[in-house]
Length: 278
Image 1 (cartoon, helix red, strand yellow):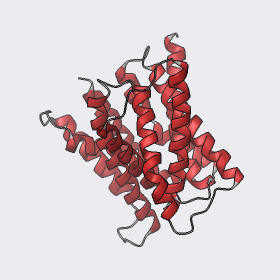
Image 2 (tube, rainbow, N blue to C red):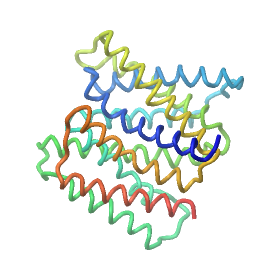
Image 3 (spheres, rainbow, N blue to C red):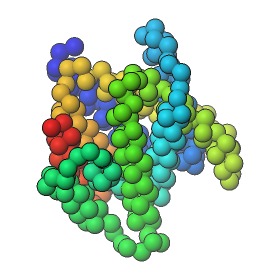
Image 4 (tube, one colour):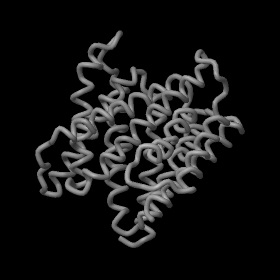
């Protein structure tokens, strides 16, 4: 694979990650049911990838099931944010995760760059929030997006230690499978729980196979020829891809204030990624 093809795979993966947010609008199911379907289909697809590589997945550990729970919380909060507010608000809230990484990561001395990341994220969120009223749907969506970002930050920090011992595809497989298993009783106990319609099954399959399993596989494959810095910077563009796709496919046009807040948070993510590889 040449560097150009690797970069194309990387951008495709990040665009697919951003596109996943749109399914919160397209699928007429509660967030728990959406994430159950997403993780179940993703686990099946990743199992097929593992089988094709003729490398059976190692036995799971309690740490992998904890990560599965974090993944479930991350995605449930994210899709709840999409349904409560908008794709843009959910993505902007989620993109706050570099702030939580800065606050939670241990073993790194305080640097001006780390404070700059925190300042940019806080400024972006304050610029984006439309109202401080707890009853405002946009504010609720942003808060749920921030909760999603917090869960993702904890997941990232845990995966940094696990990926040293576990293959990335295997790690993704067990995390998705654990999340699906943990969500089965939750989804069944949810008020108004019902079997998805045929159209929803199809959308869940696309979400799990294309926007999750395929996206992760493309992202991992691109790392063979793309530097960690390049991958981190491109990954920071996920909110940009998601907001653009929502504007084109859902006619969700964010305000200039929202776009300004998103820009600050994207810059924060890029700054954080630069510092992470030094």
